[in-house]
Image 1: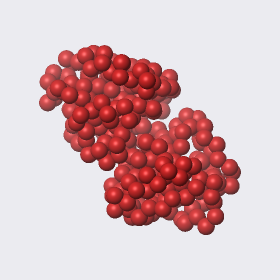
Image 2: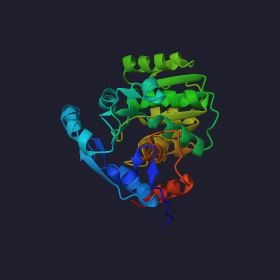
Image 3: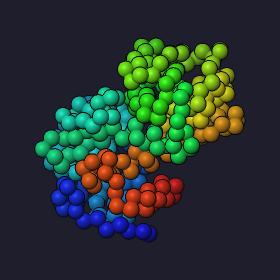
Image 4: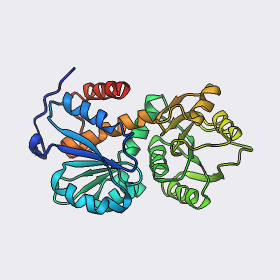
Amino acid sequence: MARVVCCESGLGVLNAMTRLEVWGDPIDHSRSPALHGAAYRALGLDWEYGRRRVSEESFEREFVTARAELRGLSLTMPLKDCAYAAGPWRDARAIRTGVANTLLLTEAEPRAFNTDVGGLVLALAEHDVTEPRTARIIGSGATASSAVVAFAEAGVRDLEVVARSALKAAAIAEQAADLGIRATVRALDETGAMTPVDATIATLPGGTELAADVNSALAENGGALVDVVYAPWPSALALAWQSAGRPVASGLDMLLHQALLQVRIFVTGEVAEPLPNESVILAEMRSALMGD
């Protein structure tokens, strides 16, 4: 295994606080411990990264203890709103989306970040989607909000939001409009006259079932797909895309890249500051993810 020696950062001696965790409900499926563990081993850091089942109801109680014991937290569903509220300081992507998935706890007050946006941007780029002009988002939850910002950063000008909840879809479309994107809304069961797009990000929860004709219509006109689901895989949407002969990326691509950005935060305190020999770190994380 390649090893990158990294002893100090702007946060002081790196082994001073060595525990981190990922929280969510459910959490047993999380691949984050494998990803982060590989990164810290490659960096030569004796850090522990565990998982804990935490619900929205128990978050505040658990967070009191975490402030004193942990260096940082990764947050998955349903805790991204809680994470945002817990961070008096927020990075630009967290502010634009209203959600956070990362908390750095070594400062005087918690710092909240959204690395999902960067993870989606990098996942799209990894599959040669670097300058999409038209796009579609399937779903309207917290990850859909991150998808809007990712598409805005990638240069999308026209966006369609496809969702079951008209109210939530309208909120995503309004967010897109605030970012300078022309946005329309479509019901998830409506398949007629679907406009072709360059790329699609699907943010539906794993196991969500859509009618076969809906999947087919979305795939035929959807361009490249990034489906945030990775378990179970392939999803029904991914199978439809594959049948249509279109590129598909699973949620593992997003997970990998957003986790690398989290490692940057936990090690350097800054999401924009690359790690030493970062390509080596990414390769170790990818290997751990594929072998986990």
